[in-house]
Length: 280
Image 1 (cartoon, one colour):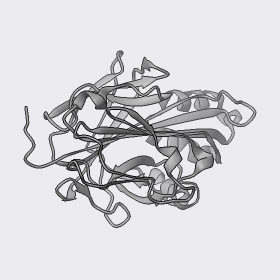
Image 2: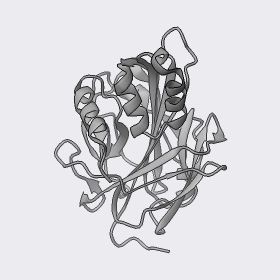
Image 3: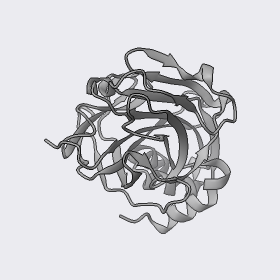
Image 4: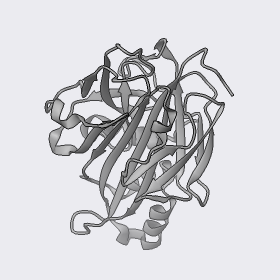
């Protein structure tokens, strides 16, 4: 699947300066660590698993934590500007779910470019509303926020499926690392979100459960895209080994119309499937 020329040009223009219109994800140094391994967590923004590492920004962060046998607030242990967001030794082999929530950032784009972005991301309702206004729609005044989760796998797979109370989140309804198909549910303010576009990307792992450097690899095309059903669920083909990224973008009228006309919420969920793991 190839992006349109307009979307590619748009991404080139804005990627370096405002990191707009791209996926944001958390990446552990090892997706299936042994009990005494040290795990590093970094964040990336980019497209198709190629991206730039993002420094931790205290002013942008609402929440950054780890949930396993207990909840840990990771914001207390990270320094502003640090490229390594977390460094920990798994307290048990049950698995840990790491969760990040940003606040909103403002952006304004020329009308044509904003409409191209809406079309590329499958944001049909905002695009239809703007087209109905015609020239009165004006430039795209938007505020956006990021919501990311990553599953560092373990034996207590139910930990990956516990809702984290994010404004928008992708919830796996089964063990992400086993089974050829995975049903996920998209929740928006705690309720199932229908008809939202869900995309997946897959990338091989460098060594065992360790990802390649995202800044040094080529971008890959989406594996699949589907819209959620009325119950917010969609079943995805995740049969390949390697690192997986699931992404969702939802846009609604802005809650702060003085600053922006629209607000978008970007959710991601990353996990990995290691060669030799049992399938069912």
